[in-house]
Image (tube, rainbow, N blue to C red; front, side, top):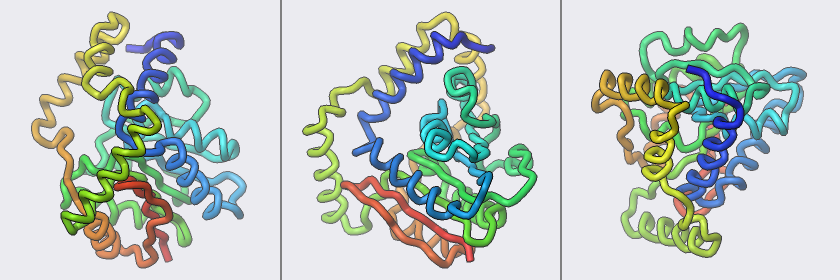
Length: 256
């Protein structure tokens, strides 16, 4: 079910533009995540990084460019996006096909030492709250002392007036940058489905989605405050947002 480099390049580039439709200042958010990784791994010769919900490798590729001596393990459950990442970002790291939060998912990572950092961007909001808590607990146990979990995502405020305000600021930024005019999620997937080179991957993707049922991609709608509470329950005691624009945040949790 492999794809050619040309096909992977086409769909990854369209993916990058499509994601900007949703993520306010997406490139800056990536840069901030890389800043944090760089800071917590400054004394590591070959840092070990885990990219959660990697998609076609957008964040992993940027981390590899910033930290060329890092070992990166990129994990996702979507066979099509993983194959695009393996083809287009072949030298970025090791792409692993597993479902985050499922029984045994950490065994599938094949880690041979503690993680220096685990990162994610616009992915963990798909996990139900109980699964997210368990995942946070597992990540706390996989990270070395002084390691970091860095999550870039949209986190609403608990107060509805504050939530409306942050969402408005994000929308206005998207209008000024014209990213709201980019291809959206549905259009990207509909167009990719017409590419005959991706047919087998789409078939496998649909099979997996049917098997997952309602566990395959609902937004948990957790607030920033609730994420922090869950991280504390999971054993992280040093937690702070390091960047925000609208309701887009980078939230960092450090191990003791």
